[in-house]
Image: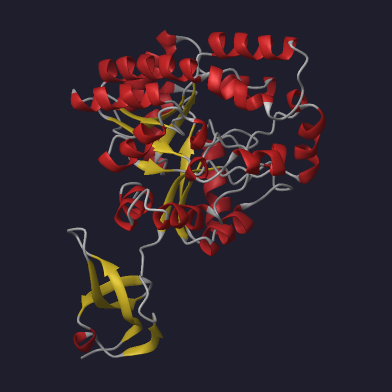
Length: 372
């Protein structure tokens, strides 16, 4: 019997029927080549004793912002993918809002070369469909999907927003020809913008006002979800809804799926563990809307368990301490809304499992199997 590079013994794996099995794992050239009775594994050059613990597959995060190129003072593919590996994430898909934006074939190829040179885990890259004539060429070049912002962005990113529904429909139709997913950031900026201005008019500048903004703006997300689903069904595109927030949007996704619309959705893991106490303590350094504030919290967990929400995606997006510090005095002056999450997402989700909210099988399905 020929030898293999690595064997993992004395471990447990998740079975296909919701069970947990004892099994050995054989690995050659970085790939699993055998799973079964340890006695039947080939001889290995290296053996790892799992100590009776669960051996999980690598997590797959389909929504990250590695900040490379253009913002490497915040993070780059080296630091970002090392953080992912430390957190048990072995594949990550990077969004295209770097600088310059990944909206031309030349920029896509350049970013791919940077990632190939720096990344220590597997990666995928999204593109912006700014030129519909190039959508197919993006996919041929390796793009795994297309990001679409249905919202107003700051001026230097305004050219990647799609606020015209006719343009959105045409974009969906062009993407549908490739069978790649159209990944949408939902918003109705006319609604959310008016809510934002009303809150600013009250004179509030504290960072907790964003919680009121998020709660009030859930109707904007739900309206955009309905619009995106209708247009996606018309175009025949695979629609993926990023970081879904509101229970209304979740109900629309459930209904669309029942009708056979090709729609998937992701949720941020941080939502399930972040508390109001955390927000008071960490302030603008964290950006997640806690599920504990939801009147429909049980419906959200049901959506994770029953397949309405298909995946976890962190929306990992680091910024510097100096950038975040602005939000303590005036949250309206801090546009940097993300936070680093890749290194902590799996531990956060294991906490949810330990509390009995989700099963370990749910976790792996949502953060490994489905995204892959």
